[in-house]
Image (tube, rainbow, N blue to C red):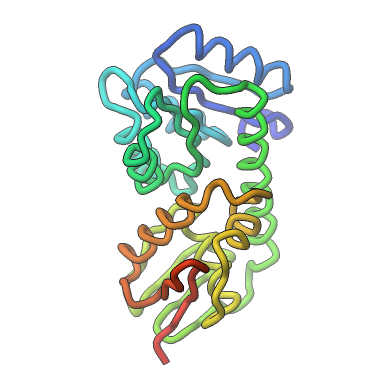
Length: 236
């Protein structure tokens, strides 16, 4: 963990003081270490300085908006933290754009503090699981499927000679598909294994991340089975 290696450090980038303070107080009650930034520019600077374990990010911010903040965090940090985005608008396009720039989860205001904490705990478990998996895989040969190479220890992906820069969630999703090549995995199974979600309410989240993988790795690599899910189809 960042900070004192015991308590998760959470950066809250939110320009509404009441909401930011409510989140911070609740996270403190959980034993976590919250930090608040009130605009986009200070949010990016705080992320670079703190290297937080999690980020709670409002979409509508003064200075630069949350989508651009998310892009910059993904670009600036070698191992970017999971990002949960907040918005006042229940707009599916906002959600897809947010997930497309690297956000891991999405909540619409107003929201339950209990639900927010539950979602953050899921994201934190995923970080811990990914770190453990990278440690176990360190020194092991990459997964090689056709011209696709996945180094789980270093968390690096190559298609041919070209490296693809994936977000943590995109990487975990690709590994899940690569461990069962040419096998159709349902959206529900992917949600359970990659996102650690027990219900199927986030199937559009899976679709959005698949689109991002296709954009970065090529549209030929992942096959859609309509009404079911996706399969990795490496070139033979």
